[in-house]
Image 1 (cartoon, rainbow, N blue to C red):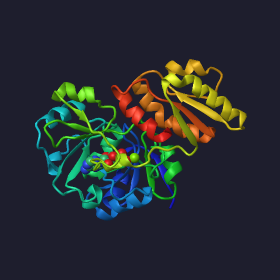
Image 2 (image 1 turned 135 degrees about the horizontal axis):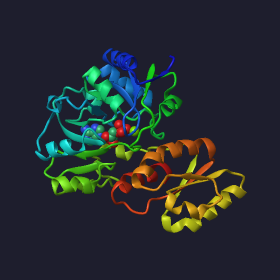
Image 3 (image 1 turned 120 degrees about the vertical axis):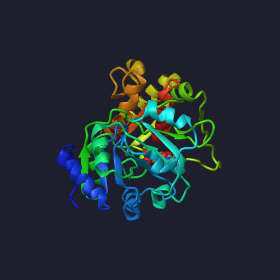
Image 4 (image 1 turned 90 degrees about the vertical axis):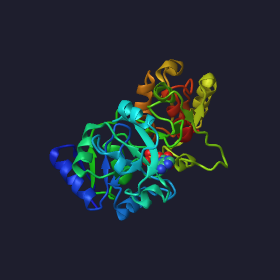
Length: 329
Ligand code: AMP
Ligand code: MG
């Protein structure tokens, strides 16, 4: 199969919508990462997504809808705070898990009784979702375990020959996957941290907890138990109070004939002056937006990425540090 990359236009969006309605799968931009899209109402299409990615079949998919879609067609909204969160944070990088009405097929929810829903803000994605007017399931458009793609080219590098079309909507501005929030209970529960933070949700609802995923626990969001986001080179991770150790490691790797790269935020980059560097930028938003692109650049240039962890787990840092620990830890 030939994989075409097409910029978002009226024509390419119509073509993509046609493929999706006919049970095909495509690469689709969103503001977080690129998605591998299929109609959530067509079981064979959803199965194909799992096959193409090599995704474990107990890890459910998120259904994406356009901003005027009536989500109550898909789920039961049991908590009033859902409307507040929807009003403030969507379209945007917030996924809410609610009781499914069964419109989206069991293949997508992995037979569970809940469905995760997201309304992306990316304009090209909205255009496509309006055009198909169906819930579109879309996990990240990478091979399972690999780093998530934030450009059409990244998708092509993983899925060339396996899908007919990638819609090119430019580089993702968010850069890490959506916050996944269980909104079935009295207090919303973060299953996966992201750009919509615990603090932001607390401000609206009054309370919000972060689900802890410990070994042996019954996992609420199955995706979090898998190896994830791994670049195709060696990696290691040091804390910000271990910069000296990281620099030493760099020199050791170099002496043994390897090409090491340090990956860190700009505030600590000066410590590594003159060394190969993947600089993630200054603010939490910048760092989130550049993380996956840096890992994918690193796997091309480096034998080993020596990553430096974030300074805290507050705000967006929680989501960033979760990904860093999975990809490099
Ligand atoms: P991905 O599509 O690769 O970004 O992963 C989607 C994430 O959402 C995974 O961590 C899934 O486990 C999680 N997820 C999807 N649907 C549900 C659901 N119904 N309940 C809990 N977590 C979900
Ligand atoms: Mg993923």
